[in-house]
Image 1 (tube, helix red, strand yellow):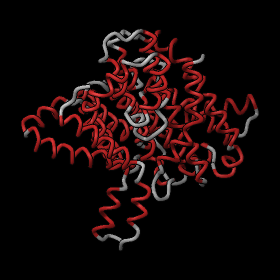
Image 2 (cartoon, one colour):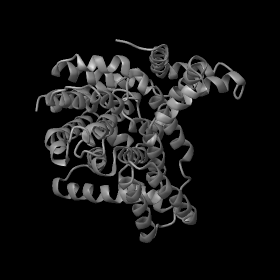
Image 3 (cartoon, helix red, strand yellow):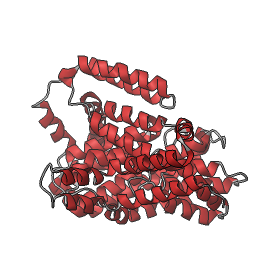
Length: 429
């Protein structure tokens, strides 16, 4: 392996950022040892915000980069990066978290759930959860994974009234894994597949037959297992979507169908132009005007939370190119089975889209190796928050369910079982 000083430092700083993510819970605990709003309390709270971790380390690294290679080299590198995904996730999170979109999603899920309840006489709460955790992630194959994560996380948030530590980690682990594999029915929705589909000529039929049906089975197994294991806790601590609608109806103005339709049109426009930054940002800016006009039917737009998630992903992208010197040769030296296992593991510390992109730069990969790389990348997408880009959006929405912040090691442990199901379905079936 050959590398420059800047590349080596990029890898070291990236490693420090990964280690930092596993320490955010401890850092937040340290913050409470200082008076509220004191300098050290605020500094430690910033360092304990998992969304800020990679941006902080990226800023430190780029400062060092300027001193080593100069301003012009650093700016040239910055201009070479592609930040379409963070901008897209920012726009899609804001739009999907609006009241009309969430209301339309709840009503659609509620329609399916009610039909299942009438046919099979199943409990309402458990049936609602079943439909949310299956239809939500699988819809990511069509409305994109970030949109699916945002809508699904908000619905789970509205249903979950109380939670135990064990329950919330199991729930978010299944959510992350299901979304990571749920977007694998099409070649344009899951970032790890999108990165290679064009270069490797993977069309809709290929992705559906090679990944899609296996992923759908894994999503259903994970959901059923979660509900069976925690059925008592869910029954005691969750309310039905019908109850959510009833509570909201008593405190919010009824949304006219025309307002909902307009929001859905904007959502469709952003999804369709999702790979063209100028186009979807233009649509998004126009949407902000519409949101202002329809303020009566809106909650507060989640601009701050969406920006934090975008900053998190931008920090990861900042480091991506500096992992090529060691990651590409490593991927190229592995056999199919080892490549699959390696992709699962590497995804936990490297965004899975970045992993498949770097793999696509390796010349001479066989068709079976290409499958192994992508299958491993999507199977491991729920192991950590950084493993799959939409995970940060899901955590941002559910973060208040984790007093003291999420513990990455607990998430990793909770995600092992649903990840094992994904591994089995994608490799054995």
